[in-house]
Length: 212
Image (cartoon, rainbow, N blue to C red; front, side, top):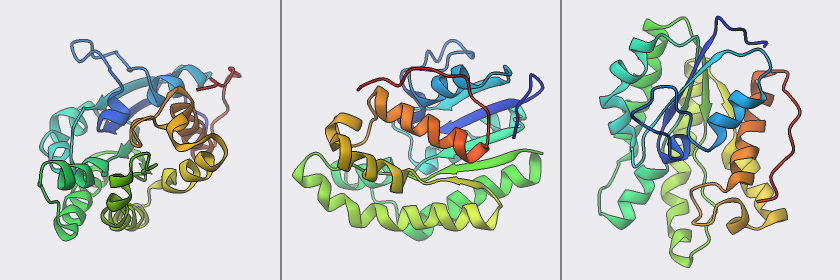
C-alpha cells in the first residue's frame, strides 16, 4: 500500500520499539526501526512511536486507550512479548500463556472495535548470545504462536521477526544483530524496518544499509 500525508502510523511496544525516544517530545521516533521506516517512506505520513522500555503485554494494555486508541492511527503496529519471557527468568514475574493470550486478544479486539486502522503484528524474537538465554526459547515459543493466532483472528499483517532475524543471525552472528540477544543493533533495526515495509508493500526511498 502507498501511505500519504493523511495517514498516521503508530508503533506500540516495548524497548525495541521505544529505542531511546524522547518521551517529552511526542514527535520523537527514537533511534531504531520506527525512525528508519519514517525515513524510508517517501510520501511523508505522520509516524508516532509509542514503545515503552520494559513493557510486558499487561503494561501495554494498561496504556492502550490513552497511548493508542485516543490517537486514532490509520495504521497500527504492535510488537510485544519478549519482556514477558525475560521477566519470567530475571525477576520471577511469570506471564502465563492463557493470560498473555487474553491480553493480546483484548488489544487487537479494541483496535478493531474503535479504529479504522490497518493492523500489523511483529512477532517477538530472541537471538541467544548468553548460555542462559537458551532456556528462554521454550517460554517465548508459545508467545510467538499467540502473536500468530491473534494476527490471523483480527486480520493483521504479519512481520515474522521470529523467522528472519534468526536466519540473518546465521549469516551475521547473533551478537551483530542484537548484542544482548534482545535489543537490535542498527543493522538489526534495519532488518526490522525492511521487513515491515515489505509486509506493507510500501515503496521506499533508497538508503545505505548500516554494517552493524
